[in-house]
Length: 196
Image 1 (cartoon, rainbow, N blue to C red):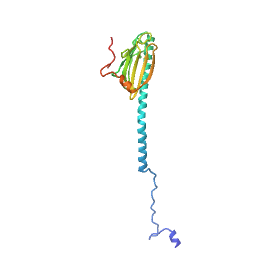
Image 2: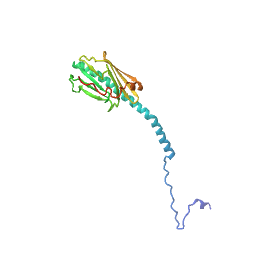
Image 3: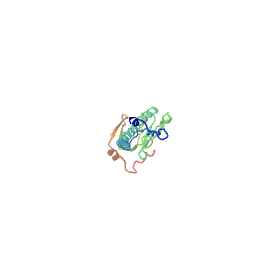
């Protein structure tokens, strides 16, 4: 009797029936675990995306402000080096500006920068150089007037302040609402002044 319980069953032909093997258990994630992970990723993305957008706006407006300030310094130095007049004219309608230095020896002395497109994607809100959207540098590199330029990207704004006497450029943070108040009325100052 003890042997009977310990031995395997033998069928009528005298052989043992084949053993049914269970497939190896695969470890997998349950539906609850997957839903939990996906919702956690969604929550983190909802927190991170607005911060990323704000950081991107800050980077763009800072990069554009540095570019404008360097071009102001470049125009002054190219005017002084060539002993001729250089000019930067701003177009708020297109969010662009043009650097013109016709007496310069280098071929790339005149060029246009589109702030509203490409890498910057910044709005040129307001420009004021003695109530004109341009600044001229004489052959000594001295500017025609003090001025300020306001740039806006998202809710980040910068004001570029130019001192004509020392050719010093300062970049300052500006409140969004103050930048919007500086925006000229529709149709005013739409483009660069006419040559004359």
